[in-house]
Image 1 (cartoon, rainbow, N blue to C red):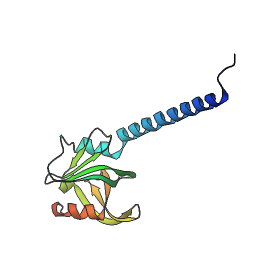
Image 2 (cartoon, helix red, strand yellow):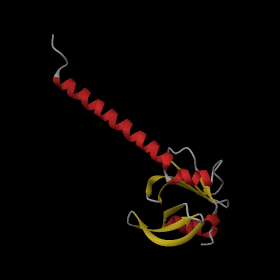
Image 3 (cartoon, rainbow, N blue to C red):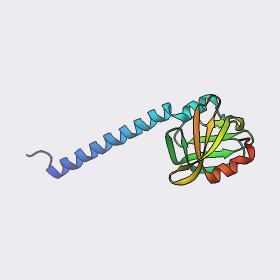
Image 4 (cartoon, rainbow, N blue to C red):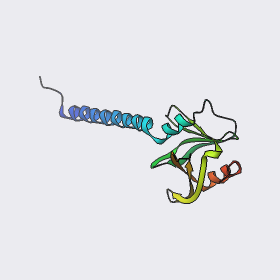
Length: 141
């Protein structure tokens, strides 16, 4: 009686490698979410719930050096800018008065606007130009 056929052994080995990489990536994503810039924002500007306002789902934006691609729900409301990242437990509601110093930039090769959050600054948020235009009516930047 022989052991496991070579083809099955290769398949099992490949499956184990895939599972190990998958678990490592999920763990890294969770650790990054815990230590990332949205955590700082949600601690300083906690959101109990999503406010009423214009909702933009699956948005791409930058928070500091971190880019969130197609994973942010944004709500533009009278209370402020609501930010919730997919698979991140704690959303933030940044008051409009905390968004300062709008300056043009680019995000994934598209026109965008970078804004400083807080004074002293705790983060920089970068949004596409069209989202910024929707935000402007509430801002004094």
